[in-house]
Length: 327
Ligand code: AN0
Ligand code: CP
Image (cartoon, rainbow, N blue to C red):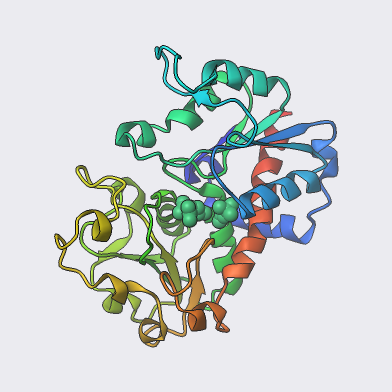
């Protein structure tokens, strides 16, 4: 594997999950793979879990790690070719990428959707330039349209906790004061379908995701109906994907236009009561009592910490595969 941006890069997903569980049981057995190799982790956006777990994963594999926060000490980067650079950006990505690649064997990139252009976001303007101009293996640490390390960690977590062969997995939109990317829900839906689960996606009208990512899932606008019999509930906020509304918070940016009781979407005991004693999941960071109540996230069926712990394992599995095939 040279690039990890999508579920397809893993080949058979169930086999990848099996390999991940093997990695989890023997996480220090592969140190020879990364000796004298450097993993460079580049962050255009904030992170707690990805930063720590991916460094830990690379170090488990014997690699050296360098972390660069582009917004904290590096030069401000221009990303569009052809721009006259007379503004505040001192360096172009077209020089910065090959320079960074000089010091790295593998590069991880975090660059969220910027919501300036749906086309730029969905063509992965930043990530695709790393793939094109670095000459090195590249993996996504959440880019504009996907968060495949999170989704793999979530699948590992579901496999560890499922009580039926084919669980019902419900992904629900939940309220948030900001404008969040569609990356996490895109990847979660795509991975959960690929894993073979019964997948239901529920959200208010207007929050439809790119159908490319939800293909194979059932869309249900009635949240209570969606939750009936669920084995896993995965909550996440996302902004609108539709043209004309792209990147917007429909409640705040179009007040009164949508006939929706937004607050009712917060996951609470009311919805969890109709599930099959479902496990609660969220990628974190989470806003309590917006996305989910204190009681549900603190409850005995909450998996938010095991999911975060499995981020080390998903990252190690991905970097291991890259090391095994590229070096
Ligand atoms: C980001 C998002 O929703 O994509 C990162 C989640 C892992 N969340 C926030 O910006 C709060
Ligand atoms: N879940 C996740 O990716 O968290 P961070 O944004 O803190 O890395």
